Length: 100
Image 1 (cartoon, rainbow, N blue to C red):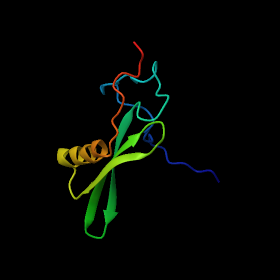
Image 2: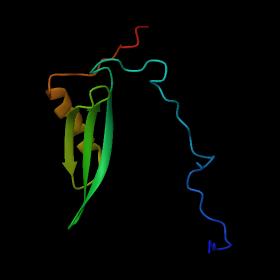
Image 3: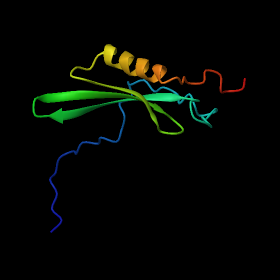
């Protein structure tokens, strides 16, 4: 019957105009080989007792997890511990891959 309610629906695809928009810094210099750029991803996992947070440092090119940390709270320390694990792996991200 294709019936619909008569009220405005949420439009979740539009961004709020007052929010800041940051430029994509790798647009002109995309990473070409492993360890050119690392990125961080933080996600939460639901458990029977609440949530735990997984912080992972990932190589952009190879998608290899360089370091990670699991924590019961979302704080700076978990990010720093993941970074410490990544640096202790013996690798480090290239700081001058732009060839300027």
